[in-house]
Image (cartoon, rainbow, N blue to C red):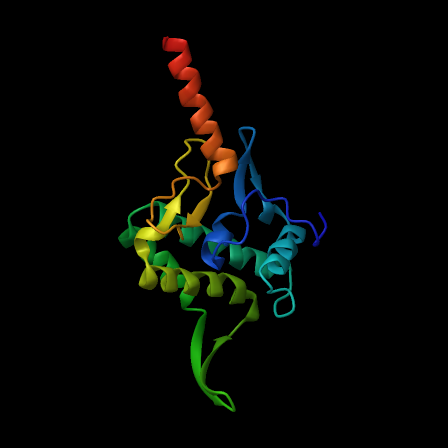
Length: 180
């Protein structure tokens, strides 16, 4: 797998959801970008993290742990997933800084291998603080993708209208024509 090609059907979501979207279904078969270190390199590059973090077995292991923690928090009761996310967050911290541009923040890690997963977990906290009701899973029954609903009225239901939304509309049309 080349670091230049990202095979996922949905990219560009906030970091936490983009990490969840490293697992998707294609024709009923689960695909996993993070099944190998090469896939981690693709994900790091897609999120501009490849210059800061190394795609190796340790980083992959920690990133998978963060993905599992986020999945538990996003797809289940927050109270049940929170301890797993907190366990990931225990591996880093935000350091307040003052630079020529003024006050700032910098993430620090005791072990940089936790960096990508930690940043994704931290991003999830930011999404929860911003608009927790806009964190969604695709409404299509066979889709496992997640998105942050940025629609004006907050009613987006599909990861992609062209893919899952169209399949749902076609399915409803078929059901109506079959009944007629």
